[in-house]
Image 1 (tube, rainbow, N blue to C red):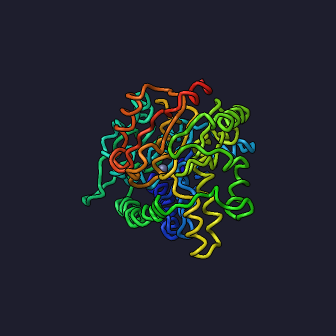
Image 2: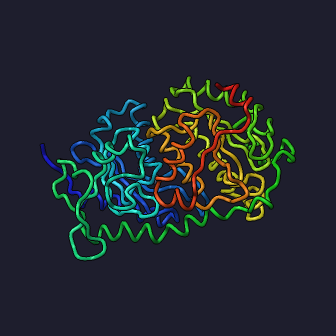
Image 3: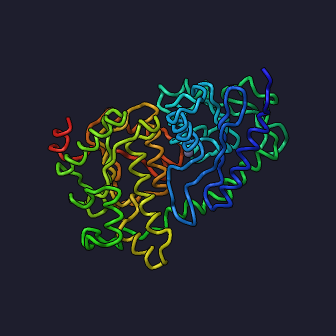
Length: 404
Ligand SMILES: [Zn+2]
């Protein structure tokens, strides 16, 4: 077999994508997908921010590469099985991307580490941030190649050894430095954009708008039942049953296990309730669809709007941290749930308001509350210290009974 690529050359492809991401004004992270011979199948970059607006909080490089892979397979493109695919990334995968990688069974090769949100945040390659059952798989599929040199960017190889198809097995020091620096140069600014929404006290109730208002029309185009149900703020109740059951049934039709996630705004209005689209991609779960649909709804409304109109859109369609995500099924200790916990973190990207301690609620538990809390408390620092992910069961017994 003719070997075609060095570790260094593969990382350079990811680094070049990271620079494109920085130029776009989003998180400076890039990645590439390689087949079992080292051929680059696809390269792309982070796409969370476009034109200074949050476009898609889930559009990290690795997550997009995996969705690309499944979309191509669904179209009939002959691609190797996931175990023969290597994802090369300029930055250590976050929890969302790690969950997606593990759920699919891909291998990954990582350049820069991320002490805040990376799954290998402590550079031990022990993966203690994962639920216990997922750690052996990560240890056997995440590679952190050696970086030779004397600078702070040098390191010993850890994790899995780079796949045998690579010619050279090390990353050049300047390329490793580039991967780190491009991310560091963008992280703060991109995170701040998640925090540019008005506080809860200045939010306005979309249920008071005329049915012909552009915001209501756009919302109903995404989800026709929007604004037809109103719970008490942060108190999802039995009124959500028809919406959740409809989405759960659709999720099954589209290859899922009957999951659904609803989003309520800070007034208790039902904005969205989405099934997954597992027929399109194994990682398109209900929460991924729901958070993405809401972000893109806001983006499309704001894209060509004046500053005054943008402010109005942000007031009527507030940041989800002031609302409530309602999961029909609570997280378990598997890879897809870990991906969703991570994607929830990527949706928030900052400290949650103390006035709303229950942005993440579920109806049916998959794990005892203590075990769920343990999983969240073990996540990398960004998730456990800043965002403090804290899923809780809904309080309404009638809602629980209806879905049980
Ligand atoms: Zn990620």
